[in-house]
Image (tube, rainbow, N blue to C red; front, top):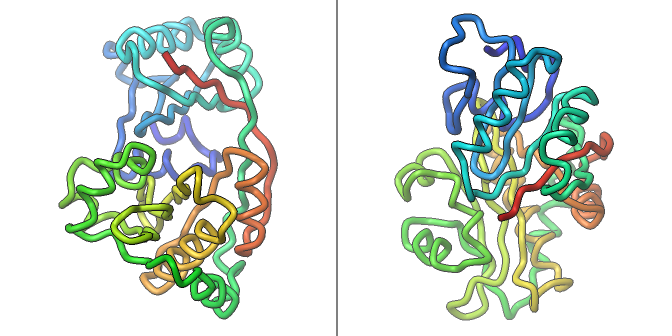
Length: 249
């Protein structure tokens, strides 16, 4: 099924096709599928020949099987976008995300180190280890730092991340949302009442440095313009907007 996704520079697709995490779906009776989807945590990517009846059938089968789960659905092209509009346009939220260029030479390590060290003294930065993992998972707003991984052991082996703490409380962090051969997809967030204090910048800078030390590429995809601005400060360059549909029962 990999050829159906050719040219789509999306690390979560690479993750599923590389057997790292997530699922690749097609219609069960197909020996040589011409439509397929990749599903990792909340993200879903449809690809293939949208003009086939199988395309509509696959979308409907996905919706039926997943039921009440949240999903952010990305179409491969405008034709898939039109099909999704027809099938879920009345019930899903439609908005733009922002792709970020993947350039291994984009980073200034000295500047990233300065950002990481600029975290205010009231906060402590720590790597997400086996001690912090259950605390992250018990903190509702921070669960996405680890929740795409099947277990603590899975995260310790295949993931990495850092969090900022004030006392014993997690107030922000940056982590692997997913991993693929050669890199990770970044997840960054700050507790609502702790934003605009440099936490996201410091944690993101440190995670990027950790990735570079391990020979991993820290891929970034932005949910909004604020995320784009943060990415650009860290050395990334925006590639352009793309449309997604979000189902949030």
